[in-house]
Structure formats: structure tokens, C-alpha cells
Length: 632
Image (cartoon, rainbow, N blue to C red):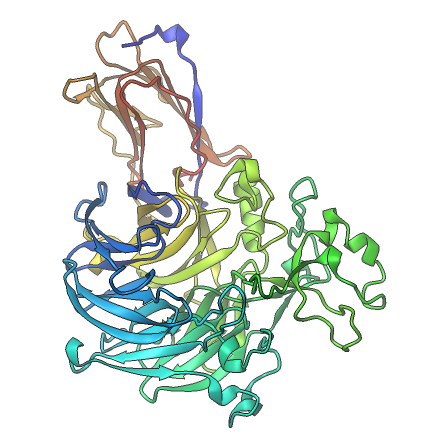
């Protein structure tokens, strides 16, 4: 064992982020690490009856089954191998004791399948659906399963299947289930409904029909199980479907976001030497990925995470940078300045749109996504609310070191500004007491934005929770209602695509909790008994033990393992809530090579953070810039 005197302790800094209101935030309960990295944890579904989580693992072409009986220690039970049924799993949903898995064909342009298992992983049934089933979801009444068949072309763009939505009727039982496939051929140029399609719906694939170009990405369903909204991401539109009739009611074009308006300013360059949120003569296409339907006052609304996406294949790509466009001299008299890298030159745009008068130059500049979340009327498709540029403003203020980065990495600061900024990926709505909260996952900078959407016309920003250390790119977000939660409290479950991890959070609303740490020989109570700190250790070949704790001041304490004359760990919790950082700071340091587990609990909110040191390695510096949200 390596030990040191108190005077020799070297400090390492763990910066812990905060929410704007006491007791309001996400408290990390537990994390599961697949150990496989990128692609191993894409989309997940939770089954309350079995307390199991089903996680799409694209790396292994499987669905992993996790036991969430102990939320602090999720364990994998088994995995569902989908290779006998196709090329890989894309989505999963669970209801009625059935686990439905969307499986693409070995050749993606062929029809895929939905494969049903029970919650123990036993195969039950399979049904053929359209090409590239990308998302599955049960209706709230559990009687039907809807499938978004994206129908993407091959990379050479020589085979382009039609997009469609499958409705699988389960009302007669699983073995008697039937599939109805809804396509968009009626909206083709020679179809009976061609006149209904707005010219603002983007149809631009080379030689593509409307039915080929509309590629269903995501589905949201009304509370009464009667209506579905389907995100048509590349087309910048939502399709509305009558589930009982099995027909398309209408297709709503989502329009454009004017970034020249003050509230819609954005950072458009990764070569501008910093955070430069400014207005630009550009238009963002909303192009949502994840969407969610919710009801207020008898009216249904649709929330959208406005990620943005392009068609970028070997055989055809619409992607250009603004500096490579020929801009109309009348519309852009300052084109030379605009097209500099530090201005708009680096911004990714499209060659498919923008030439309004057909003279070969660009009259309007478009960009992918709106860097926001929006709320739309379910009745007529009109825009009710948009969060404008709040995501960039909030991350610039709260986590400036990772602003518009990839994988929350400070080394990639500002690197995504020329693409889609923070890149909102998905949104879910959850009932929090009498309020409705929206949780929006940010794929690139990481973390979750949380808004109160009880009034859909005037949502209120509540807090931003950065990704936990080691979690990258939240792809899936699940809200678990208290009635379905293993601990009787609301939960948020994030599946993080790039890190191959799943993290489980307790959701706290405005609380009345009081500091309740009780000091004992193994527990430090810091900051007026608010934070409880413990350290467990295990020497090689020995059973784990609890370190002895000794308080020094209200914000500082020591842990020793073998002799009180040798301090192995020193820890401080400092109140920096009134500083520019608006954080509680935790400092920890040590000189030891035994296995160590540090656990810090905020007794007001119940949030827990754990930091581990492996056996046989020196206690290394750690910087956690995205932990507690606890400032008053």
C-alpha cells in the first residue's frame, strides 16, 4: 500500500454542476456498461412487470436484457440474438408481456421483420413489414404495434424502396396478428392525392417518387390510440395517420426557422475561435428525429426534437458547405464576407433547395435541424412553440468548455457548430405531479434539457443535466412513471449510443428535503450535514472494508484505511454556488494503490455519485464536470 502524510496530499478537482432550483434535477442511481463501446446501447424499452430493460445492441446484432430490480446495480441477464431473423436490430418496444424487435433484412432495401419474444427472451412469433423497420411502438391500449419502415436507398442510390408504416393488429392475439402497410403512393405526381402535398415537403432524391422519398423515422401516438404522427425527417414533414382506418390523413410541412431573427441566433462556425452566437441570413429546416404526443385540456400536441438530417450517399449527396455555393448577388451582396470560414463558410447546407428562381444560384441558405425542440398542434399542424436558441445559450452558460462539442469532449469544443450544434435527438413527456415535463436528449454535447410543458404555448425551462462521466451521445430516453418504477419514484433512463452505456436517474421536482446526514465512524457529513461521504476499500486478496472517516472542517474530511497516522484520501465539498460557475465543487485526492470506491450522497435530493479506483493502480486524478445538480 502507498500512503502519505496529510501535508503531502495532492488535490484533484471534480466540478459538480447544478440545477437552478433546490431539489430539482436528475440524480444518477446506477449505470450499466456494455463494455462494447459505440453502438452497443442505442434504443431501450422498460417492462414494469418484470423490472427488465431491453436494450438494442447494434454491435452484436442483439437485444440485451437487463435486470433493474436494483437500480444502483443493473445486471445483464441474457441477450436476444436476432441474426436468425435478419441483419440487425434497430428498435424495441414492450407491452402485454411481449417484446417487439424491429429487425432489418440482410439487404437493407428488402422487407424487414418484427420479431416477438417474451420477457425471458423466448421466441414467440415474427411478422414481415416494410424495408428497414427503424422504430416500433405499441399503442397505449396495447392493441396494435406501429412500425416506421424507413426505406432508405442503398449507398449507390440504385435501389430506393418506398417508405411505409406498418400497423400490426394484435387484438386477436399474437399468433393471429395481421399487418396493414400504409404507403404514400397516392401522393406521387400521378397519384389521386398529389395536389394535397405542399411544395414545402422536400422531395428531391434523384429520380425518386414521393413514396420513395418519404422515409418514416419515428412515431408518436395519441392517448386514445386513434392517431399517429410520423416524423419524415429528410422531407421536413410530419404525416398524420388514422390508425383504425389505416390511412394517411394528411402530411404537414414543418416550414423553416429564420436565423436572422434575434431569438434564433446560432453559432454557425467551428472556425470562429470561440462561442459566437449570432444572427445569420439562413433558414433552419426543423427535420425532427424523436417526437412525442401529449394531451392538455383535451387537445393533443406533438413535441419534436429538431435534430436535422441530410441525404449523403456515394451515389448522391445533397451536402455542401456555404463557402462552396454560388450565392445570388442581390440576396447576398456581402457574399464574400459571409462565405469566410469564421462566418457562414463552414456551415453545412443543401444543394437540393435554395434556388428560388431557377437561375442556377442560391437565393436562400438552408441548414439541417433547428437546434431546438418545438411543439405543434395535433389538430392542424401549426407551430405552437419553439425553444429558439435556448439550447446553445444554456450550454454556453453552464458548460462552456464543451459547447457544441462531440461526446462532451473539451478537446472538440465548438466542433459541431458548423453541423447541427447541440443536436437534439429525442424527446419524451412525463407527468410530474400536476405538471408535464419534456426531456430532450442532446446527442452531441450530451445531457438532457428539461422543460415544463404544462402550458404548451409557454413552456418553462427547468434545468439542464449534462451527461454523467463516461456517457456519450444519449440516443434513447425513457420516462418511467412512479406507478411503474421499482422504487415508486419517477425515473429517466438514458441509452448512450457512443459509450455503450445505460444510465438510470431519479427525477426530483422542487423538493422540501432537509440535510439529513448522520455522521458515524465511516461517514463524513459535510456542508452542514447535506453531503454524506463514504469510502470502501479492499487490499489485494482481502474482503472489502469501510474506511474510517474523520471530519476536519465543515467542508473537509479525511479517510484512512490501516492507520490513522496515514491518510489515504482527502475530500472537500466547497460551496461555489454564488460564483460564476454556480456549482458545488468536490475536491478529492489520495495516494494508494488498493481498490477504492468513493460514494457521495446529497441527502436533500437523494442524488448519488460514485468514483472507483481499480486494484493495483495509483489513485489517479479525475475531473467530473457533470455530476450533481444541487445548488440552492
